[in-house]
Length: 173
Image 1 (tube, one colour):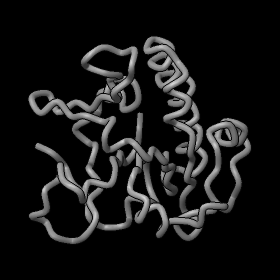
Image 2: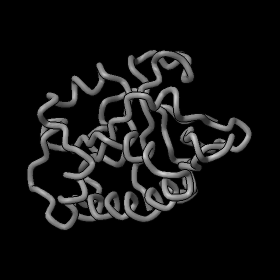
Image 3: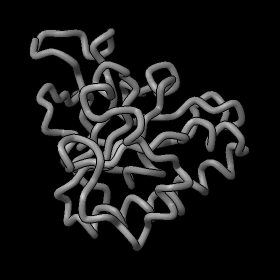
């Protein structure tokens, strides 16, 4: 069963992949977005005040570019090790009371869900037909806790349709 999230509280806790520009615009001004390089420079030196979601979130750009320049095997290894360690460091420092949001503008077209297994994958030129298994690499297999971020408040909206704005996980472990 696909889990969905309609309220805006998701941005202040956990981890998200976001691709909806309108939602991003409500979270922070463009100047507040940090690069992937800056994210890794912040590991172990996290600021007390965060620049997005009223001081409760950090928005990071550059994920797609990083994945696109790596081979499928290298991208999988990087997600599973380097990216996950940065997410763990962020979560530990803020004790789960802040949100880490990766801006992925083409994510809507690059993330697929296998309905039979409810697993998510990132389409990558070098990762075969199944793509990079985000559930295993990033969510440590806890895809049953992943929520689809939906715009609006209508509980009957098509969760695969135009209102699908991203993915949210309350805490990666």
